[in-house]
Length: 201
Ligand code: SF4
Image (tube, rainbow, N blue to C red):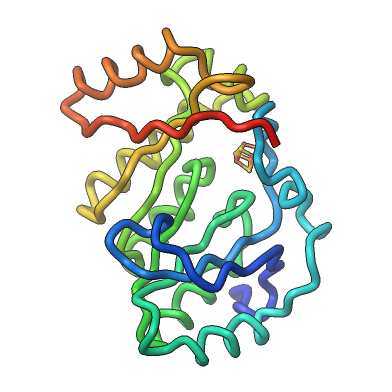
């Protein structure tokens, strides 16, 4: 049996953003859980699978209903939203309400990304480092570069618009590696990554 949207563990809700879904006014739904351990994580309270706020999915739906006609879309973010098997149900429900749907992801679950793509209007995909052993060092998980690469391939093949994003400086990626990320993208005929400067929490 498939997980339903009611099972989503919601860690937060942002009613209005102009920057998290390019070109659109959107709300952001933050989902709980992330198994990676980036040292610069800005949302450590969202890393635990069940340790977040107690916002029920039905409360999120009620908030979105009130904003129909005022928002273009809804972005699912995290944590890592694709960790939750119920995400597909949530995406579907939001689409049925008439909203565009965006996804912020690291790509750590490529097959879930692949399943979701037909229902998505935009993806913000992190590229955390040059895709080699430096990637795994930064995320604290072996094999994370390969997972990112598989998700990137699925997204590019789908034709869904994607924005690559990289956090640079401080405890995140160093300046030399940042240049290498951009060079790697260029040499593979891919768009440049959007820089996000590290901010101490
Ligand atoms: S992938 Fe994102 S949520 Fe997970 S630890 Fe890294 S920065 Fe935090």
